[in-house]
Length: 399
Image 1 (cartoon, rainbow, N blue to C red):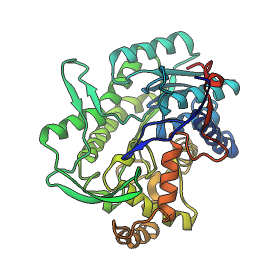
Image 2: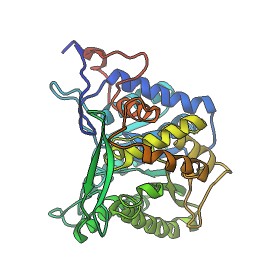
Image 3: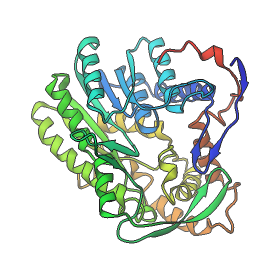
């Protein structure tokens, strides 16, 4: 292909194009955030399930460049093929591996479906044959549209983002056209609720822990984390009280079960309730983009805004391996405490009613921040990076 000019494509709230050079620069930026804060004592060998983007990728960056850990990532993203440049998640793992190996760190990527038993077997074989010891950090950060029943391949569970009990009408941003639209989401059926629990709950997390333990590749003192979300009252009907919230409650039940298994040997199973950040998964949640527009605007004024890498480094540095744990009455880590503080939420609640389809404008500072972060997930709108791309320059990069 040689030299090409990349065109950014956004359909609704879905990015359809990538700029690999921008993604490489964003990877360098995330690493710099961690390095600036220095090394801290943590994991030696980390397995990141869902390590191709957002919270999973940020967890891998802080494990490697903050803790000095060897990292294994399972991501699932389309590689480059013919005239398709590949998905952002594929490039994220490529550029992470490049940076980690340049720093003398072990980095192994699996581009595979984490739900499949075959993937578990392949990862276990790699740990047994290539790593110098068992996994002592397991991060579960998977958001997926579907999962095949591991005990019946003919059954496929599909997750949905819907309220429970009654429909919900809210405003959501159309990132392609910079408009605020009114959307109505119908209530989930009982089968949709159950399917979402199977996909987005903790069942597969438990299967991974059991598989790793049975193979003897999980360290006795292993810490394992799954990421949850509470959000503000404004998001409760579609999230906390909806299908995703129901799935997170199931994941928390899995955490309690895993805690019983791991604690006797010195391990730990943790739920981290993370803050609202811009991810490819979160932007399709009805109402989320409008809430973030208000939240980011308030946080910009207060100087408290965090991206995924900022929060994850703080989470692992201070709470998982540090002495500044913030937990709630359920024992969950709460790095979202700043976002949900009364000081922030009172201002957000005042601003939200002012963001309507009638008066919405792209000039809102919070929306500018949100849209810029969304574009950067695909490598666009990155300072110092143009849309001119030399395909051959990146052709030899190894996955």
